[in-house]
Length: 95
Image 1 (cartoon, rainbow, N blue to C red):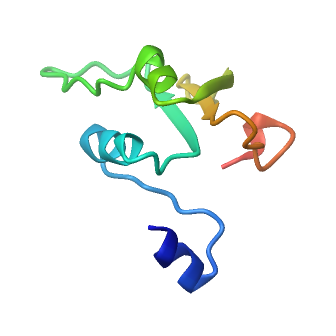
Image 2 (spheres, rainbow, N blue to C red):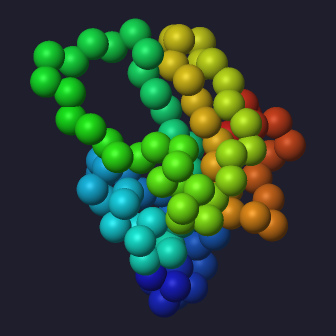
């Protein structure tokens, strides 16, 4: 992954793909920041567990910087590795 990032001059890479993909990246130590969005107003008939809990993110070396409610009622949590600054001073302004 580092080779791909340096080859293309990238500073950030966003990974989307569901909990299985996220956990694979976390297991490899390739995650510096997490924006975790919990949709509180959505009810699923057969929910699929994400296994991305606060305990799990702490185990992977991330710390909770803060959380806020989005305009749609979702809860957004911002996680980062220690000593990895958030790209903006206000958590609600990024991404």
